[in-house]
Each structure stands twice: as structure tokens, then as C-alpha cells.
Image (tube, rainbow, N blue to C red; front, side, top):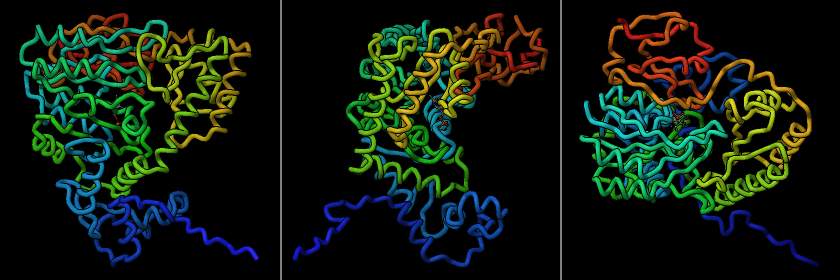
Length: 478
Ligand SMILES: Cc1ncc(COP(=O)(O)O)c(C=O)c1O
């Protein structure tokens, strides 16, 4: 008789340590009588329909720091401090801060913590609006680098290191070089050369790597700026790393000379005083997963999925995909495509209406699809099949008649300094009267959150196609 083999499922498995997740599990198993916030008290005081939708357990574990021995976020103590330490180790940083309110708050804290009023910050024009808000707060002034333009794609390309060196040579009082890498659509700049240049001029390099949080976990992806000589890096783990919406990380590099205390103090001022433990636990879980064998395999599958999709797309005659062959590197998981005869917005709406597919974003020219950790091969096949159908169907594009542009590709015409203009007296006028006036507001629609106009910039005819949804504009009072 054959004996049954006792398969111990957990044999050979190393335990994944996720201190916040574990502390929350303990608190869930031994609940206390709760006379503190949040006032719904483990879900007993909420709308029934909401509870049914979100699940009882989600409300039972919804809490903030200080309670249930979970530790605190500002300053980091207990399980939260341990989770941040493990994240720093996993990403190869000297110090990692968990962020609520996304990478936005990381950029704000960096601007407040390390830049000063009147200092110049060398920054790419296609940066996210959070950097600009940071500079409005600190009073540092942007010195714009205009990246390469990929005209055919209607996109910003990479940042040429020579441009940074030229600016460093001629600009006094530079507080930092602050680069976005990759772009939203996955175009990668040469961060190693840029970091070497910054070291030569002894200027800190900050990299907004909001869209690159997976890079450290697979060699087929570009190398993270933390390993290439940047001083500080922000990661929107919630975008592609698998954590929940709004949760991000800010890392300070091992050899950085940045004053970590100043950044920590700024974060303390900016952060909520009631951080969601669920969001913090999701960061902890995301780091633990990405570092685990299972997570690594899942990321490997994701990359295979992206390769599979790209191979299928290569065979579609009318479809073109942005990829590394065009003289710059890209992140393979970000698939930007354009189809002859269709604008990006039209493609987006066909995918949505005819095929129930929602893409990450679309511009005048093309649409961006993210191949994520959670996507199954069957979904990728479905997407490829649908794109194939679209390329073989005669859709007529009416979107171009809208005269509406979505990807800001303008070179600014600056009249006043950003912060000065932000605080000047303003008035609201009809859009039709705006040409020739000076903008009083940040206009940077999301996605991609890139500036169309900033306070202090002259409004021209070229801005109008980007402002079709606006009836009024705030301008500096004359
Ligand atoms: C380049 C870049 N940096 C920062 C951010 C802000 O990130 P979050 O949404 O995590 O606040 C974004 C958001 O789209 C972004 O594209």
C-alpha cells in the first residue's frame, strides 16, 4: 500500500516579515473597548450599504497611529519604524519615510526641507505640479530644462545631461537638480551621467521616480536612481508597486549629504496627524511582497506579459508603440501606442465603449496602458485582440475636430517669479480676454499633472487649445 506523503505546504518557505501587518492582525484578534477615533468604532457607526461594500473587516481594522500598540508615524516608532527600516533595506536607502498623500507630499517635504527662498532649482518643465507647489512654499525658483521633444509621439522625451551641465556652469546659487525619471509614458534619462555631473558641481540630485517603484526588484527594468547616485528619490508605490491609493515612499540615499532631519521636520508639518494604518500596512505589505520569492515571480510574469503584448503589437501594421529602439530607453511595462488615423483620445473611447477596457491615460496622439503586477495573461491577450480588431476596422476619428490638446508641450514665457506671482493681487477674467495677460494660477490638469501655465507666465494663443474646458482664468491684476 502506498503511503500518503504529508505535504507540508509551508516547508522551505521563509516567513515574510511585515511588522505593521502583523501588529494590525494582533490588534484585530484582541480588540479593546474603543473610546477613541475613528468614531465609526470598528464599523458600528456607518451606513450599512457602505459597510457591505467595503467589508466588515476593513472597518474593524481601520485605525490611526498611537492606538493598539501600532506605533506612530511622526516620529516613526514601534511597528511603523520597523517597517520603514525594512523598506530602506529593501530599496537600498539610508532612510525611508512612508508617505500618505502620495509622492506629492514627498516632493513638498523635499522642497520645504532642502530648498531655500531665492535658490535656483534646475528642473525639467514636464515635472509634476507637486514640485511647483513645493517651490511656491519654499520660495526657491525653477530654472527650466526643456527635455527632448518626441514630436511624432506628442510626448516629452529624455533629459540630456549636457543641458544640466550647461545650466550648472552658468547658474549661481543652485540648491538642487530635480529630475523626473521615468516620464509618465516610461521614457528613461541617463541618471548615472546626470548624477556624476551633479557630484562634480557638488549639487544634490533629487529624482522623482514616482513611476519607477518596481525597478529595484527586477533586472529587466531600468536601474533605480537610488543605485545611480541620486540623493533622494520618491516612489508612488500605489501607482505600480501594489500598495493602496495615496501610499508612497521617500528614500534618502546611503551616501547622501542631505539633512534628513530637515526633511523629517517638513514631513511632520505636512502630514495628517491621523495617518491611516490601513494605508501604512499596505506599504509594508507591498515591500514585503516585492522582496519575497512569490512577489519576484509575479514581477517576472508581469514583464513576460509586457513582452508578450509588445510582440503582438509589433505585428499590427497601423499600430506604433513607443519603445527603447528610438534612441532612448523605456520601461517595458508602460505601453504607449498610437494608431494611424486615430487620435489617442478616440482610441481611448473606442477601447472603453466597445471593449470595456480602461487605459491609464490618453493624449492627442496615443494612449498609455500599464501592464501591472495584478494583470493576468488572459487580460493581456484580450487587450491585444481588441487592439488588433481596432487596427483592422475603419473608425473615423472625429476627436481632432475638437481642437483640444492634452499633453502640455509649451516653452514658458516668464514675466514674474513663481512665488511672487502666486501671492500677487489677481482677478478672474474670461478666457477670450486672457491672451497677453499673466497667469495667476497653476494650470496643470491630471493626468499627467504637467504645467500648462504657472503663476507669472504670459498667456499666449498657443495655450488656448489646452484650455478648452476653462471659461475663466485667474490672471495677475494690472
Ligand atoms: C512624475 C510624478 N511625480 C509625482 C506625482 C505625484 O504622485 P502621487 O499621485 O503619488 O501624489 C505624479 C502623479 O501622477 C507624477 O506623475
